[in-house]
Length: 441
Image 1: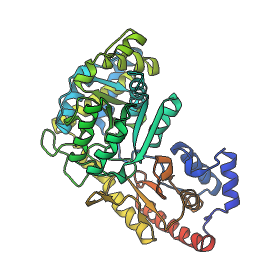
Image 2: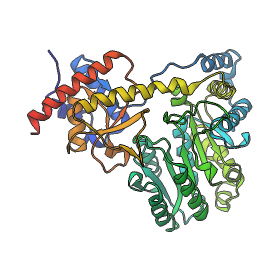
Image 3: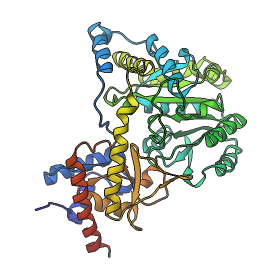
Image 4: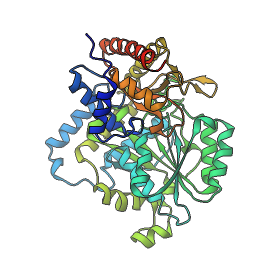
């Protein structure tokens, strides 16, 4: 006999004991903890859709390189502040191969995951000009990104970019940038969680306005080459990963090993700063820290104070994977297409049970199948929908936690690993539908 749905009173007690007053506002990690508690309570596996833990095995190219580095004694040595030479060079070549942008190896700095990169970039951008005190986020977005300025005490603002696609984006950004207070703009492309992908027209708009109003664009490429509607797998051949870097010099790219190489556990990424921005002199930075250039401060002030560098051996792993991908001996994109298959199949199951895609269009195209998508159920609110799904053994995060004003949940397909996971999702959604009939209608 199924142990689901969990009684409402029992679920409320669990949240109270975990100091969660509103489950729709819970962080990804809090939702993960709720799922673990539910598994312990029921002794049944939960359908985990809440966290983007890679669901593809790590390639031996990375692990072998890291093991070799450890065997050579790299663990006892502090890495260079700017990163090891091979990583910087191979990252530069990788970016040229898949993004078609030229960035000097000097301007590429390893970070403890992209979150470490964005944390330090947001802090630095907020300090380069006293009149520019605000970070603008294009939402929906990665919820942890939105927490960073709050933790740092930095003024920030968001809007749902889904409402401003195409030429509407120019009007909206012009309005926001013209205030003179926007220091930086941050977004992910492809988008987490909506999986919309900016067009070249939209990236050009962002780039042109960033130059016009001297705004720094922070582009998170955590899911680069994962718009599977286009074949982005061939190094040094078009089509390439779309980027704002084609349209402005005011940018920094964040490229992580977590999703594209499934190297999440080692917390390794790079921040690639445009050649011009890296060397740009900021009097306010020189006054504060004795260093004037944006890039030197990012490396020697912000990253150093925050983490004093990142794992020495993991840099060798990331370097080796960048090199193999650019050489064409490691087709990482083909491996990632598995996420598209999982998304397609799980979407069909949700739709079978009456769910609808919340963010369903990419301007004039249907949303592609990838790492994330979003679903809602009738007009049920975020808090009620997520609570009822969790009570039925399905874990996710609510859309309002991503800065969205829409009702629904984010679905991450990475942990849909086996046939039994899809069967379990189907069964639990059936339980959910009955729960709705009993408690809502």
